Length: 131
Image 1 (cartoon, rainbow, N blue to C red):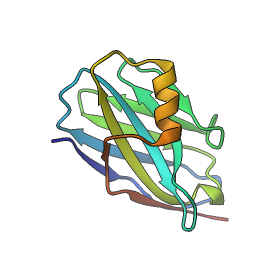
Image 2 (cartoon, helix red, strand yellow):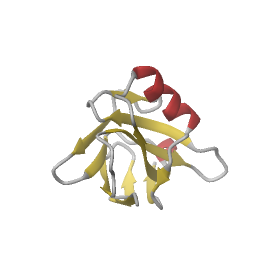
Image 3 (cartoon, rainbow, N blue to C red):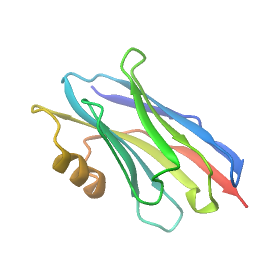
């Protein structure tokens, strides 16, 4: 059973940085997609960034150039480094994982991030950015 646990959230002033982590366990496939989402109060859930088992990444325009998604296979950890944080980055951040029986492809990576059709989700970690 796939299990995801996020950590690293907190309160930071605008312009600051945070590193979010997600411990992943229970994966059985060599192929997968991992992503970070966020949801601000009253807003829909938004895909932030995705990385696949081949290491390819894709970022939402809202965070492109300010964030880096990465994974550490040895530590079974997914991370999101966010710099130059803005108040609009405030929200609950979730990690998500979807396994695949076929090698990852760009179209699937893109559609997963925007459709949110990941099979497994963590409970979230709160990020608050004050101005």
